[in-house]
Image (tube, rainbow, N blue to C red):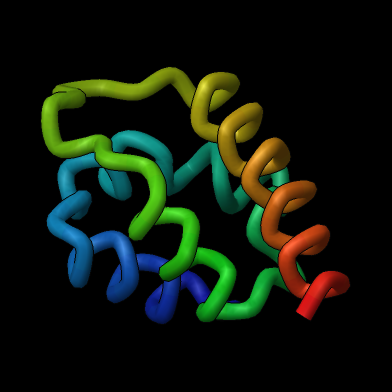
Length: 78
């Protein structure tokens, strides 16, 4: 997924402020490389970050990986 698409999904869910904070660590780590937009949209539909002014990248990455396990299990069951 391209950075512009990632930014768009963050903005679509009202988390543009978090994208600005997490943009560089996301790019450097490659944590969203190869991730489909459906997965990221599902992640934001499940986790509500609206009350977060800031989010540590390690927290974001941990929640993302946890969600990836759950998401993959749901796909296998369907």
